[in-house]
Length: 559
Image (cartoon, rainbow, N blue to C red; front, top):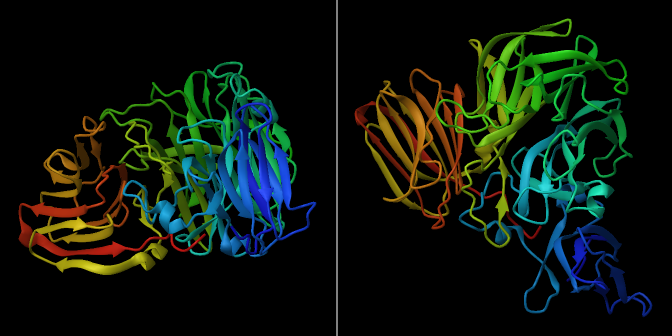
């Protein structure tokens, strides 16, 4: 393969037995340099950074070692071009460039939602706008499609829609890399703020035994960057949870309010899920002021991934409820709380579910040019993921603009997503709709109603398996059949249905109701890649408008 404009090869490898090594071979450079060998340690994967010449032909070989993740980096326009991933050929054992279009072309991988190159993704981290680009860091396991020791992946975008993959930003602690069978943790979730010309990150470092407990240590660390490619050495800012708090003590979100810096942290306080609050005058020294809020409902291990912000004249807190089931059987939902915040005290006025589909977790938000934008992790808490070679478990929701109206939270897809609409597959009114064989299974449907009528819309599947959006005397809900989540109800908290925006993207469905009054995200795997949109209404004449558009892929080109 030719390195093109790239000057660095990054390889994540582990030795299968003593003597494992990576060989980098080129006939185009000096005899002394044309074959270089790099020893690989046994145990956990190690991150090798190997300088290479630009525009040079190389061959890369593994000897008695295993490579999980490999890419070229170090080009001058990396924020535009992204890294160039390499995959190992089964027959030769060598590495070749692998196009995005080929990698993502699978019926069980999203085509216009952000997803990792492969393997595991969870929580969005460090969302921000910095020097002309949106940045998204995220929890990453580059080695398999299951949760494990945590790295930070990184991606950038100019429009919140098309993303480029950037080099991995953080890896687990040395204690974990040296002893992965007995220690777990790594670089857990965190947030970013822009201050005095640099990005400042706050994140949790977690370290502990394989079973969570009182010996698990979660601390809050700080690092900075002036270019989003190079990062300062991390500094410890909070070394332990306050008295009465759980060892679950993580996911810092930092904001400025009333001329003070505040940090919200997810935890439990005296056995109840809580968001803890710290304050600081200099972003270095943090004082615990007490809980921002304590969840009254029982059966929650802790609050995770809290967010806290001023929005439309109110304050909004959001928390992910760990190990919680609601009355409908939905697992680990995110709850929002609206209220006032004065002198460090939050007074709740209203609460609701952030996403009624139960596959959106760990949301994080940021503000840019007057818009408050959130992204959530599309999780798989019902164990429905289908694993395949070069596949991925985990992706991100469409970025959502946030507002508070009439005392409740509204979420709408960012307007930039409209740029992906292409061929119109259907337009009509006053009639039921039956579209089958939509291939690839990636579309957007827009529906408006004259009246609050009963209907059902099949969004995927066949006679044995399916995902449906149903509205009847029981209300509006997502319902599945023939899959592991079929016994769970996914109701939306709306009194009537006037308008729907539905995004189907292979394994993911996002439903926006009444211009964001409620939003539901649900996974549904269909290996055929033959999508459908089948709408049956009791009073079809009340269908004011229905349109269905094909959505273009964001994963195109060689990178």
